[in-house]
Image: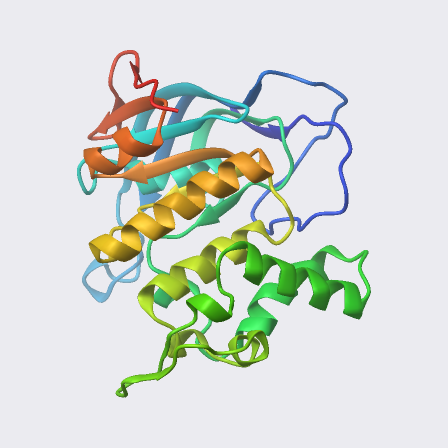
Length: 278
């Protein structure tokens, strides 16, 4: 049996993810997410060697059950290929091949993907990337959308004092770029840390209560990593976010999380580890 639904009180108009279907109720609960007996599968794409037929369906997750509390930062650790990203995509219904129960107690959860370079549309300017979710949601005027974009850029630290823009095949071109210059840039004209901030901003445009961050600092140097982790901590407190933080780096997880789940070959370890650091 497959079940995917959302249970929440009414909220302001938010971006409705194209991958999710929701059933809305008037319940208030301590858990913001419940996953029960989840099995997920992947089927490889057809190839010439297979004569155009699909390859065998392969199980990736095995009987996964856990919950996420409101306001919690839950760490999910495991080696590469252990199923962490598949679990995240299945929770958000991006991967639809699963059985078990996924129950959301908030609307429109969002994800920060592991690689901003591939996740951000290189042909679109930053203003478009951030405003598009608001256009899809509706309910805001053009001026209101633009104002929210500017507020979010400042919120995630893409303001004048933190905008050392980098152009491809060129050196630093501006340390004190204006907000307008940020809005007219393309993702490829930002540094790695700035692209990650942009990813966070895009995920938060419609004020979700649940955020999944998939290896958000794995490609960053130590200084920028520290800045992004501090940003996530700050947003967690300011916006009351519940976060699932995925990483193979135990140092990052111990610093950020109150509780830790370990995934190995598609299985969650028995129980979970209380870190109690926040």
